[in-house]
Amino acid sequence: MAEQRAERRLSAILAGDVAGYSRLMGADEEGTLARLNAHRREFLEPKVAEHRGRVVKRTGDGILIEFASAVDAVRFATEAQRGMSERNAPVAADKRIELRMGIHVGDIIIEEGDIFGDGVNIAARLESIAEPGGICISDDAYRQVRGKIDTVFEDGGTQELKNIDHPVRIYRAQFGNSAVTPSGQQRAVADRASIAVLPFQNMSQDPEQEYFADGMVEDIITGLSRIKSLFVIARNSSFAYKGRTVDVKQIGRELGVRYVLEGSVRKAGNRVRITAQLIEAETNRHIWAERYDRALDDIFALQDDITMSTVASIEPSLRQAEIERVKRKRPDSLDAYDLVLRSLPLVFTLMPDGVSQALPLLERALALEPNYAAALAYAGWCHEVLFVRGGMHQENRLTMSRYARAALLHGRDDAAALTIAGFCIGLVEHDRPTAFQALDAALTLSPSSAFANNMGSVLFGWAGEAERAVEWGERAVRLSPFDPLNFVAFGGISAGHFIRGRYAEAADAARKAIQVNPLFTVSYMLLVAALAKLGQIEEAKAVGARLLELQPSFSIGRMSAAVGMVPSVAAGLTDAVRSAGLPA
Image 1 (spheres, rainbow, N blue to C red):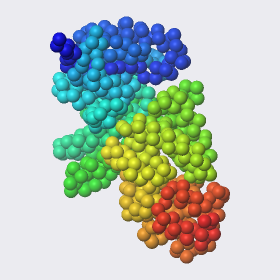
Image 2 (image 1 turned 90 degrees about the horizontal axis):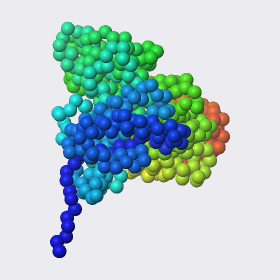
Image 3 (image 1 turned 90 degrees about the vertical axis):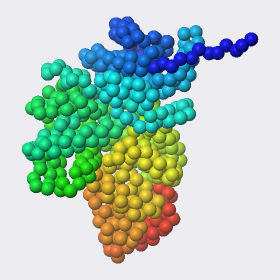
Image 4 (image 1 turned 135 degrees about the vertical axis):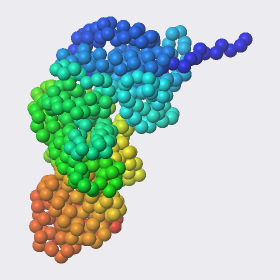
């Protein structure tokens, strides 16, 4: 008797679920279920039928839908997400039902109405990495819809998906791609930092500068889109304002963003002046401004230079603005994103007292979202600080490792999470190959990341790679000159110069680190060592006394063991600080 073959066909598969469903049910089980059923009955199920889809099954908050066409699947997903955004607009942020959707085109097996196979598994994994309110599609699906729909997709690069044995290239939908909302109509503001980059005004009469300015703005949009925590309006929406004089508050309302970046380009002879300013839309408050004067020798190199500098400088400015915003919220209304933001000033002290206060906030965030990569990474960093500066307790080391490794797993598309996790693993576990691989991945995601260069500088310093420590540190400062984290970069620069015997330069960099953060004891250690090598023993002793006031338990031996300094670096620093009277 011939073996019966399984029925197979090629389909577009959509997997969807409700973001934060457990939190919503825990807060209001009956109300959440009633709202979800209303959305399904009144809006989502009619929309599935409209686009010729078949609901294969529901699993609690999840749904699996089969479409004969990728175009139908993506059109349904786009209209569904836009419709849900409108339905959620009048609802309090902590009660909104937001969907995540993943779409893949692949071969499936059909059995008793259900579907199975890699096609289904990949769609489910894509859904799991989609943002709340977002759509993530595979390369196979993207090839089918490219040029056939008006949805704009951003290339998310190649991703390793859980339990999928081959990498998958992904694309994320950008929802600012349709015509601008009619004047006066308010769009719900994204529940995280959100920005629109307006076309820069061409102050010259030279039409070539128009192309230059537009190209630079497009590059800035792309660069900002790589920042995981930032929602960026797509080019097609922000460029709808080109040539129009519109109030920033109005733009914020119409595009649903908290921040607006605007600027101008003016050419004079062979030079060009570019200005840019970041504004908080609701208050019209200026967050950041910069002016660039450059020669027009190589227009493309200039474009890259301005783009990198702008994106790198905006990131810490936005972070600080978001921290100030969340301070104004009631403590009982904080979601996981807000809790992480509120923890950051305490984390960035990089001192035991500060991180001990940050950890309860991060643990609350992880209780809401257990796989939140940023929260995992910052929690790991807190335990790294407690280990290195708080007594080298193995409990902190093991907890740091657990959090950092989880951040690597869940933060493959988050440059900041990869940076922090890699730094912790390299510093405390002394697993430098994994650390530098994580930093490389972070810089692939966000080439303008001053943060990754900051942390890499220190790792290279303790690894004895002096020139790379200086190079990465100087690049971090160049990318973001006023970054409050630059004390880390100056520390790496100081270590690099010290290793090479450039003690005056090492002392200068250490002083700059102390100016940026007067509480960070590693900077004092580096300054003591450099001054001792320069023969300035009395000044070295005074700096050492201040170090011991900040960290009474300090000893160079414990410090070098904790951060895994290579023997040559540890020996040089030990001899220097011992001569200035610090504990060895």
